Length: 388
Image (cartoon, rainbow, N blue to C red; front, side, top):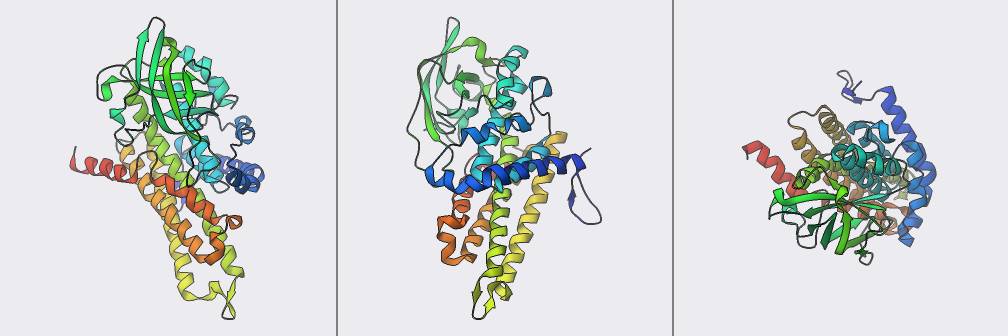
């Protein structure tokens, strides 16, 4: 049974099963993630042990089919999970999203043998996975990627580099887009590269504005040998595989923004109910009340928009891609703005690490860039409107 908008309340009503999924994710996040999030951020620590704990909960293969250990849930279910996890730590939630994107590509496009070889260890979180598309010279222009894979006997030999790869060096498998043919999207293929592949190495951990608990490195291929049996689908199918993963990925990262922004608003409500100025609690000043009202309104609008877009992707409606792009653009912009306003409402305390607000602002900023920049989302939306 799908969730639906209730005509009486205007709210997006979830099924009992969806509420149970949401509550499970919220409970795990509150118990295992939230108490550690600031320490992980401060220490730039990748909590592989806690990430692996999500496997028994079914979060290692949220929309992977159940014959290989997946949970076989829908995209709206996934959005609920990532939103709940992000209320504790958007960086933690986003890594779970990336792992699931990589696993779902193997599930959708891999052979039965590949699915049974890779997915049980991915769905259990025994193995972690990263997604490798972006390169130093090709970000938004993904079809211009240069990493090349040349067939040699029973192997492909890869040369090139991927940039901004979350989990690089910590993940066990890398779903890699590489050029096996001519320039352009039709020359791109997808290979599953294990961490121990000869010729695979990693750059230094990047010094980033946010997402400190995630490692972010270059993935470097120098005559890297990968068995030809690790090719997903067929040569030339890679660009389509990459794009197929992005609609869901855009919804997931929007959900991470939504959860993080909700946490920021919750913190602002608690702080303004306690802080006094000029003899009154500051939440008694009308200007501040209006700001809180706008933040709540914008978050609820973003939530309904995101859930509707996820429902369209579940139903495979013709406009699902446009809605995914619109939701990603709208929700990540709103999420960052709400977190930034929450910091302002904290005054100088919002700038301190211990209050957790500045971390949310830093973590949510990158969501407007990854899974396709919000400028690229506007291009996608406009092209659907004018028929290109």
